[in-house]
Length: 100
Image: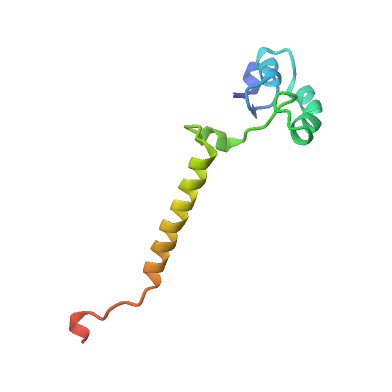
């Protein structure tokens, strides 16, 4: 979720949907007040609902939620495809027929 000054709730914030984010969207809480509780709750206690958990611009790129094993498998497969592609670039080239 993101909010901006035109809605009167403070600076633009892209954050995970949660109690603090909903309170900001409803105008019951300011971003600055939400951030007072964020550091300890979110970063140290791991409670994503205990404060304003920033999501960042890359959160807009998420179009599906996958199991960890799928993500790891796809990452490893992609790694080996790239290794094969790079190895093919470094392979010695056969001289052209005209060069022989």
